[in-house]
Amino acid sequence: MKIIEGEDGMTERRPDNMERITTPALAQAYIEEQVKELRAQIGDNKVLLALSGGVDSSVVAALLIKAVGKQLICVHVNHGLLRKGEPEQVIKVFRDEMDANLIYVDAVDRFLDKLAGVSDPEQKRHIIGEEFIDVFAEEARKLDGVKFLAQGTIWPDILESEAGVKAHHNAGGLPADIAERFELVEPVKILFKDEVRMVGKELGLPDNMVFRQPFPGPGLGVRCPGAITRDRLEAVRETDAILREEFAKNGLEGKVWQYFTVVPDFKSTGVKDGKRTFDWPCIIRAINTTDVMEVTVEHLPDELMDHLVKRMIEEVPGINRVLYDFTPKPPATVEYE
Ligand code: XMP
Image (tube, rainbow, N blue to C red):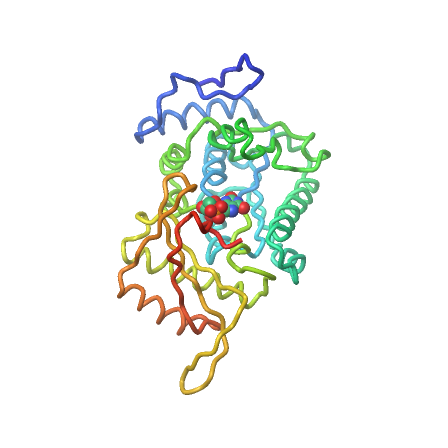
């Protein structure tokens, strides 16, 4: 399964005759072939990987652990905008169960301090992106003798960058002094997302990692509209955890394409235990789509809605109202920022 050099100057091609990976056996064959190729490419050198815990970087990590074991150095940056339990799961799966070389960077204060008081959505995204690169570059500079940088580039990323939709950064936007030090390793770059998932499953990654719903790079930051505060961010994280738990219990996990909560930056009056409250609302969003350009809203059963309202108000400090967003895309986008 070689990548063919294009005559039009584009070096990346999914071979026309490449069979779509649709069965565990085909996924196993891909894994075996990649492991051989990775060993040949990497030799006894070291490889660095930014491991977010998302599907693509997790599958790349698992492939590299199988191929070169401790020669892989994973860096997991906790920017404070991850979902509840995510950093813990990355540590458990990769360090404890797969015995990977994993550097965990607690950058929560650093990100939240930089974001304090920033309400413009684009500026927030920019700060999160830049800070991530800075933290990762700092870790990379500390390491000696690493020759390769692994990335979870997948085939749609390449198609999008060729079509001019999205820039596909060759070294993840890293500063030149870092980027120039590395050769890239991209072992899933000719795969579509469903194929990456299938390979991940065969590599033994847990289902909730392999089949998880899309999650934006700026994480919960875009679900805490306006200037992020730690208390409101916690309310987003806790309500999101309740929503995910209830969707799993009610068999909706694999059925609904994406679901999450948003806690907007305004308060309203309520009453609890005979006392006045003045707290935030939590907005629930649950949507279905095939192409993300057009999105329909999932209608939840009444009993589930009632249960979610009860749990969120009882369990999450700062929430006194629960709202449901019935707006399709267009006119609304999926995320609030
Ligand atoms: P919108 O809000 O544009 O979202 O309708 C469409 C899909 O893209 C996801 N999304 C992002 N994913 N980085 C990402 O990796 C981002 O900055 C980002 N913004 C939105 C969103 O969750 C939805 O699935």
